[in-house]
Image (cartoon, rainbow, N blue to C red; front, side):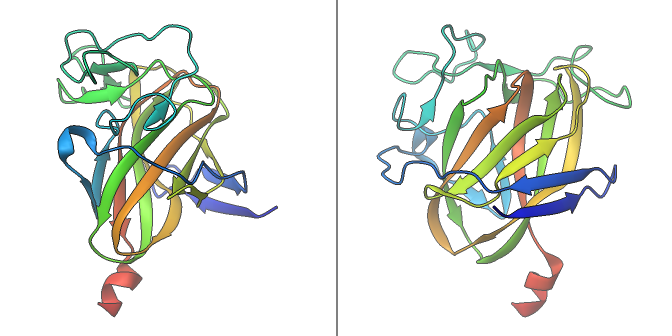
Length: 210
């Protein structure tokens, strides 16, 4: 078992990384609306792939929540809880409002996962940042690339409420090859969180090599 630690630039919180099993290797999904998401850059959580249950995503919940009227249905169905931020409700931990009408994934349960087809423009090591809210301690996620776990369990900082948000920096580092790949975001423990996006930032040391 492999264990690593990362420290956020803002809070100094230590994230413990522990090796876990990989996602299924075979994949038949397609990018949402036919458009790949790009790295370096932000992966918008609500724009997960098309392909249905067990292919593009897995939702263990007995009932889906949210999404109605949002306009991100797949084949006329809302498969994962999606909503959008509202002024006066969604705030950062310092009390300032988030921008309104930004899509996010919510109503998350343990063992749920989402796939994202991406095009990596530059090979290298990337720092991962994440705009999120977490209601419970010891909330855990992981990230896989083409079915191979690249981070292990990432323990996220608690924000205290699903509508209290935090920009977490450097939650993990991941090495990516150039070209099209599928990134899987898996929710391992707790749930009770929202996620707006994952940001992949090429490390400065990697930029120097270019």
